[in-house]
Length: 86
View 1 (cartoon, rainbow, N blue to C red):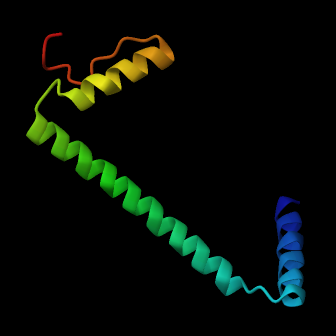
View 2 (cartoon, rainbow, N blue to C red; view 1 turned 120 degrees about the vertical axis):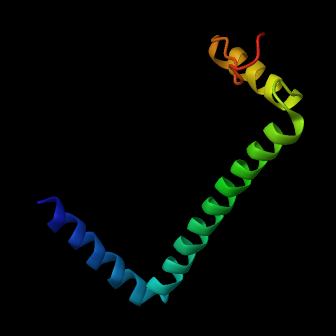
């Protein structure tokens, strides 16, 4: 039932694209771009995390600010570097 509904919507979308001049190819390019952007963001966060822990050490300013934000927002006290005593 759901498959038939989705297939019907897919046909409607194709018919609309024919009348409006938009192409499915353009939508696919946008999708590909969004996937690339997400991958770049995740990679940047991973690299930033690795660099901050390697060069700034445990209990650095970035980590302390992050802990404070989590505590302020949730009310839960967290320690992002459990190896060090706080």
